[in-house]
Image (cartoon, rainbow, N blue to C red; front, side, top):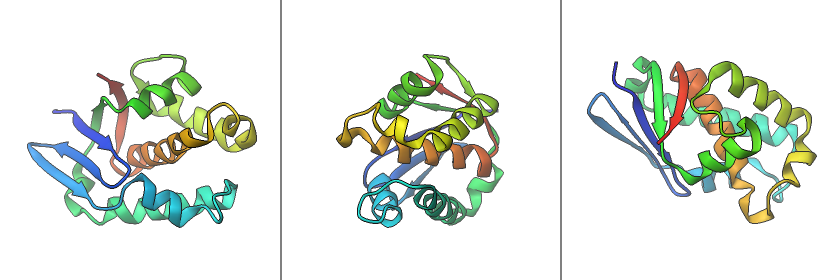
Length: 143
């Protein structure tokens, strides 16, 4: 089965799967702005982010048939990889879920591991976690 290719950008999300291109019009900026009250990270903000991402992914019914592997060359995936996976490639669902739980449990620690202008990497993290759940992705490779 062909791997899903994706790129998560500030103003939109691009997904290429099964020779079809999907453009989701809300990007990481919109998700972050709608989730974080006064720019403050919290468990409630993450829950709100999860809800918004679920709605966004479910807005494209054809994506419900996706399953298998995903590939990206996003620089944020590389930063996420350094923060949580120590350059493990590919990242599977178990690794990702373990790292996500660690992130939520130690939110303040991780927020201080990146510069303030790099915190969007955590929106990216929530997004790929939800992609793995809703699109049934088993692993994500960095190319």
